Image (cartoon, rainbow, N blue to C red; front, side):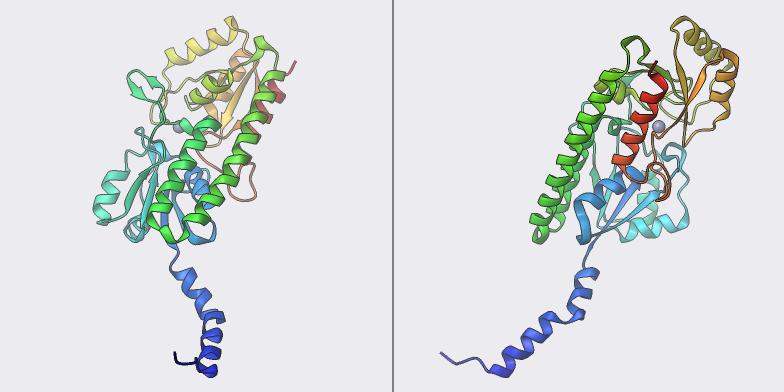
Length: 295
Ligand code: ZN
């Protein structure tokens, strides 16, 4: 067998260690577009450095009533994966995908979750149960592994450590709810975004708006809420980061009920806000609920 030329071996070592290679790695990252900020955070946690993530509906945006911008078509056209919630949340998305001529693989992160039905339609806010969030993460992990098998081990390890954090978060929520007195686990929020949190953790939510922010509360809806607050002795009402605060302020004023703070339902905040990540969001919500519902 021929001996290796020492200078050739030297050249190969230099080439593999050069910064150019690191840049190549950066350029061959998988381009993933997430429909809204919460999904973007899940993708970031699983994809790590191997994935470039952009979101369509950004911090504090309302995914129910989003109007895509021209830039979104470019983002979607360039994507290898498009991660969506499904369950009817992103009604504006099919048209965007079509007009962008996107060839992206669409990943429905709620696949395998049995949805809550409201008037025969699925409630899309499944991420509000941490156990469902784990299903989102597993779906995203599997999609990334399929799209980039060379990095499968990285995605599996990242997902495993994030899923462990979510297990801890689920325990935190259960412990916090257990400390709220039984009769006080009921609140008013603006739109019906907390059905999965209610079902998983046993806090009752009543909302003047339906599962979408698209609707408006009628005078009759508001009157019904006001009489419910009085008859059920509901301790607190809550604002939402994506909804107009006037409705809740009016209900609070008319019933003399305390405003317990702001809950984050469908969107994260910017880095300097209360809820820049999903885990921050769940912690903030449960702390806000606990504080307002304690005696
Ligand atoms: Zn919503």
